[in-house]
Amino acid sequence: MPRYLQIVHAIREKINQGEWVIGSKLPTQRAIAEQFHVNRSTVITAIEILKAEGLLEGKAGSGIYVVNNRWSLSAAISPPDWEDLTQWSLQPPSDHTVQTINELESRKDLIQLSKGELEPDLFPKAEIATALTRVSSQLEQFGYGNGLGDIGLRIEISKHMQQYGVCTAPESILIVSGALQALTLIAVGILKKGSTIFLENPSYLHSVNLFRTAEIAIKPISVGENGLNIEELFQQKIIKGSSALYVNPTYQNPTGTTMSSEQRKVLMDKCRYFQLPVIEDDIFRDLWIDERAPAPLKTLDPFGQVLYVGSFSKTIDPGLRIGWLAGPEDVIKRLSDVRMQTDYGSSYISQALVRELLSSGLYEQHLQKVRTRLKEKREFLLQLLRLHLSEYATWRAATGGFFIWVSLHKKTNMHQFFRTCLNNGVLINPGFIYNDSQPAIRLSYAYEEIGKMEEAIIKVKEILKNG
Image (cartoon, one colour):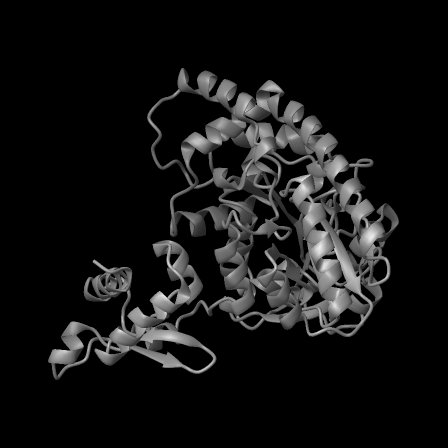
């Protein structure tokens, strides 16, 4: 069968089986061409046949969409328009660029300067194999649990937090499937509809619709070289019981900034005065490179004002889906109840694995290797930036975490810049997805190998030079 007819039959099958419903957008012609190992002209031929059959329709500047199936073409009653129905859902879609990045971060043919995860060589295979062997001899019936998570893991996390200076009982810790779930639980389980969340700007939370879903107003507060602009924050209208602060004070994502100990004390003093609850996102803390970061805000919290969020997604692997939330016991009980209404808890195997890594010292052993490698890669990327981009940009060298925040000198169409980088095989995170109106990009040194980082920065230089 000719290739174009293979594509026609494959698309028809997707439509007829209800996998691609009316309103669905087809993958790009490039993606289809790669899937079938053909050139784009073959894909175009197949699409034109399906258009003639009335199954597909092109929308200028948007793409190709399914507009009919064999049932709607032969029946007087049309099937439900799922595309229209999803527009009214509580969860709005992500920004188109964010969707694109999410789809492309698994592509092996792209140089990944966007990924916020460790390189494959830093996956702790030996440590996990050892931990799994030990855990397998301890397995009992899993069950759903009580929503709080495995008590053994909560005990180990409690001990782990003591290293930061945070004293939290296991009863005040909730195991979650990553930091975003912790924040989602807070948004739907504590913050009331119509309240205001003061949110760093730029912040990775601007790239997701987490608080908007819960009908919470977002008030951006700028981030400078020393983290959150405290003076700007307390010039805002703060309403007791209807306001909260989200802050990522250690190796902030995306800027990489870290708030000093002095600024942390000032912030917490003012938050106590204004009775402003604080959500502290501290998922990068264990990834210090030059020296340990200042103690968490939670150490300055004798009254239970701070909800502390941690995660093992950045330090071990995001596929484990294990994080935690620490706070007042009553709040944790409330959120565990909300958690039980959604998914009944995180995977027991993942929890047991992380528990063993912590208790055995394998986690700390792994972290030492990670910090050494991250320092090498950060220094290499900084060297590349000095060598190739000094004429075009300035940047902040983070003292931990994964990212370097690069601010471009010239006014630049960042949407076009993102697409041009992509067309040249380089995937970056443009600043606008974090709500930054200035021309900036977030570069990750954590994932990609050194040789490819160099190739990517040279390409970025050429794009800036010719732009």
